Image (cartoon, rainbow, N blue to C red; front, side, top):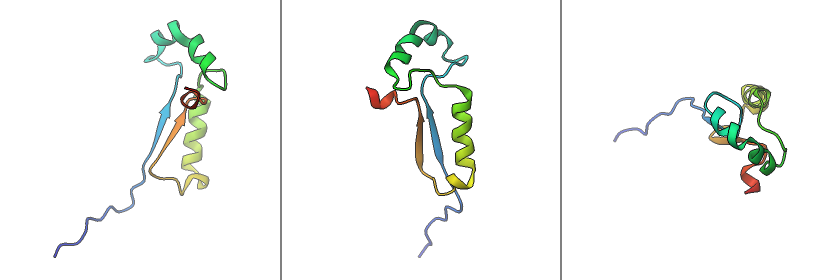
Length: 81
């Protein structure tokens, strides 16, 4: 009889950023930034500090029990649709 696989100590958390200014989103935001902002409850695009804060939280003792989660960083855009 074989033993079950051992997963060891694996943790996984995904960050799902919404509209943030970047090279990848430049053209889209040039045409649609005002639409994203109007539809977002926080009424702004994401900023680097928004991602940094989430990463610091997940890296700290406060986030030590968070695993298998998807953290959406979109200013409420997905819940407003």
